[in-house]
Every structure is written in structure tokens, then in C-alpha cells.
Length: 458
Ligand SMILES: *Cc1c(COP(=O)(O)O)cnc(C)c1O
Image 1: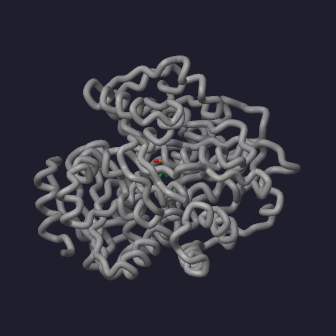
Image 2 (image 1 turned 90 degrees about the horizontal axis):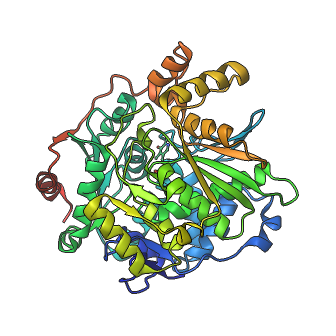
């Protein structure tokens, strides 16, 4: 399998090179040349474990790592999860919840980042190389990425987070990691500011090559690939007799839902993918109007979704505009210049899978309370956004709501919703009062790069 760029200006490359490239060197995002169709395999995969599904699916997209080594990487990556199913489904009255928070940092990001950390280690050992990871986080990617590479040789990791905009526990999960290869930077700004600095830095190819920069954000194809697995795994746990099911996905950077789009494109019987947003509803507005227009960011109780510019949207756009890289370039450059772009009705018609609507703080809190009182099930605020929007769509198919984080990561929202301190988790309790280390960074690309240069592996 070869990988190409959404902007069409990168020669096709192999998987390992795609992982190391992160963002495509032409400013676009890497995607596989095709999506292998597995519709005829679904039945025989019915009783596969998460790891077995991962092996089958990864083997289609990773053709430059020997099978036995791929298997070792998979087993190692998912041994750190605290549930034997890795991503179990809990069935509630009207909906099912796909619990993606059983990894070491209690958010779905672990599913991909445990694997990516091991993958980086494997590739660097093989190539005798070094890597400086630069990432931006709205809260969960940072801790999951740090957890994936802490203490690993030949890797330094630099993670920017918006100061005061993550939940305090999320910040502590990052800053309490004291290994010397871990560098946290709190930036005075929003997540979009952090992601902007990251993207600018990656698009300076001389800088990127000089410092061997690597990406852990969902611009990295390996992350999306790893996330496709749980759509298949959830399907096995929920669907009967080959029926179509739908998924509701609380969306920020469009990575998680894009993995669902791939699963469907490969032939998984999926009806709708519900794209749920909080007040940061740029994607909901786009799917309902064809106008992609930036607003200022709202800070909400679901901070991982407080995003205006969703980086993976470009991958979806590529397929929406019928795999036309010139069109992608035109749309992305117009958006960058003016903050607004309109996609023609005729192209919007190509989408028959994604439907979208926004939730808001009031509805999210009500949803948390309702599920706690009625079903004795505690939803984190991101998951609650997805559940609320799924309820409003009330589709005829079975709907699986992706639960992207453990509620204990957001105790303030849980208390606001239920009036009680219900959300705890031993992993988080153990962090309280821990020693921390963090660099305070200005919202300034030159300053951040200076810090990186001072501390980079060379
Ligand atoms: C990252 C994150 C999201 C958003 O996922 P995307 O892939 O960015 O769309 C939703 N919920 C939680 C808890 C997250 O950490």
C-alpha cells in the first residue's frame, strides 16, 4: 500500500515513511491510495478479538513491516488497557456506548497513541534515527502521546497545550510525567493557536528535516488507521445478521469520525455517521449548508472539541471533491486567506453518510444527569454531546455512541450536571499532589521554536 497527499504533490510513499512524514510535505495530509474492500470478510471476523481485528486491518495498510513484528507491536500496544476487550460496548436502553477510555490516560487517544509510540520506537531502531515529536493538545492527545513515548530512547516529545484551557487533571496527567525526554509547554492562547504553531513549524521543511520532527496529532495517518479498528469491533458487539448500524461521534479535529468514514468505505455496514459538535459548530454548519466558515472559539465543558479548524477535515474534503487535489488546494487556500469557503451543492451531494448537529452546555449537562438518574451510567461531557445529538437524530438503525473519555477526567462538569462528586478514577487520584514540570511559552512561533531547538535531540 502506498500513501499519497490530499494536495497531490508528494510522490507515493510506503507506510513507515508516511508515519515519519506526519503531515504531507506539500502541506496536505497523507491518505492511502485506496481503501481495500473487506465486505466479504465481516462475517468471518465476527468473533475476532480487538487485537485480531487490528492485525487483519493493519495488514492491509502496512505492507512494509513483517507480519510477526506487526503482531508483536499490536500485542504490546493493547496490553496496557485495563479491559480484556480493549474497547467494550455497554448497551443502554436506546443506545450503545463504545467505551474507548480503558487505556492508560483514560481517553480514546490511547488506542492510537500506544500503537504509534511503539511504532516510532520500532522504525527508529531499524533506521538508527532520532525523533523530536512536536504536538498540540486540547487535553487528551498530549497525555496519551506522552504516555506512549515516555522514557523511550531516541525520542524527545514537546507538547503544547493552551494554558488554563484543559481540565486541571488533564494538565496534571501531562506535567506530572518527569522523564527527561518529555517537554510540556503551556501556551498563552487557544488550542487553535497551538495547532497553528505546530502546522507552521511542520510546513517549514528545512526546520522539520533539520530537527527530525515527528507528528502525534491526528494529521499522522497511523492514528487514523488505529482508530478504524474499534468501528469493526463495535460492529461485532452490536450488529446482528449483517444489519447496518450508525455511530455518533463527538468531534473536534475530525480524526475519530474520519476513521469511521474509512471503516464504511471499506465495506463495514454503516448507515449514518453522526458528527456531534458543542458550541464550536463549524462542522455542523458546514454539513448543513456547504459553507465552511470560521468563528471565534468558545471555551466549553467539552474542551477537546473546542476547535475551529479541524485538521482532518481536509482528508474528508478530498473524497467529497471526488479526489481532486487541485480542488482541495483551491478550497484550503481560500479558507486560509479569508476564513470562509463555500462548497458547491453538486459536490455536497456526494456525502450521504455524515449528518451533523450541534449540542450545547445546557443540553450536555441535562444528558449527563438523565443517564445518571435513569440508567446509572455516567457519561463524560464529550460523550454526552454525542449521545445528546444521537437522541435528537433518533435514527431507525441501532446507534453506537463513541465514549471518548472517562468521566473522572472532567469532575467539575459531572458535579455541575449531577450536583455530586461522582467521578473518580484511581489512576487520577494517584496523580493528585504530584510533582510537575512545565515550560510557560508565549503564543509566538519563534519563541516556541527556540525552546524546541534548545532541547531537541540532534
Ligand atoms: C480528542 C477528543 C475528541 C475529538 O476527537 P477528534 O478526533 O479530534 O474529532 C472528543 N472527545 C475527547 C474526550 C477527546 O479527547
